Image (cartoon, rainbow, N blue to C red; front, side):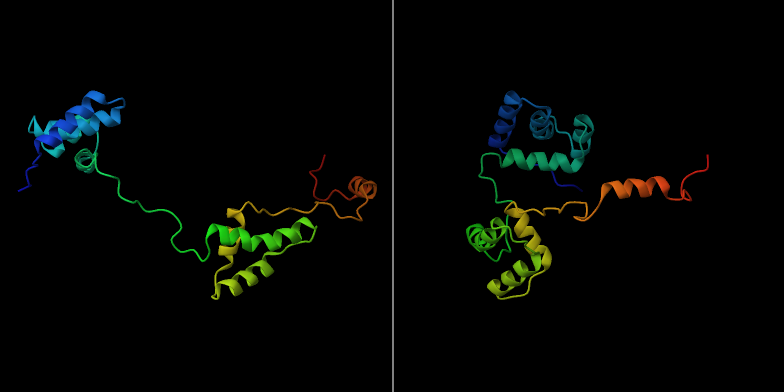
Length: 169
C-alpha cells in the first residue's frame, strides 16, 4: 500500500500563494501538484493525468513547493579538478603570449611539456587544449596556397589535363 501524502498547513499556504502568483503554466502545475493531493485527495497518478505531467514530476513539484523558501543547495558544476587557478593559468600563458606577439610560431607540444613540468604530474594533451581554449587562444591557419605557386600555370594545367575524370560529353 502506498504511503499517504502529509502536508502541513504552511506547505498548503505556500502552494496557494504560488497558485495566485503563478505567471507560467509550470508554476501553476507546481502549485496544483500539492493542492490536488492535499485538498482534493487525489493520488499522484490522477494528478499527473489531470496536469499532463509524469508522476515523478508531481513528486518533484511537491518537493520544490515544500523547499521553495530554503536556500538552494549547491548544485553540481564548476571546476573541481583543476591544477591551477584562472589567475595562475593567465600568468602561465603570459610568457607564451609574448612569444606569439613577437611573431613566433607556437606549438602545443612545448606548452604541454611546460605545463606538465609546472604541475609536477602527467596530464592528457586535451587538458592543454582546453586551457588554451578557456583563455581565448585559437589555432591560426596558414595560407592555403603554397608560397611558390603560380596561378597561371595551374589554370593552364586544368585546361590541358586529360579529362579522364570528367563525364563524357
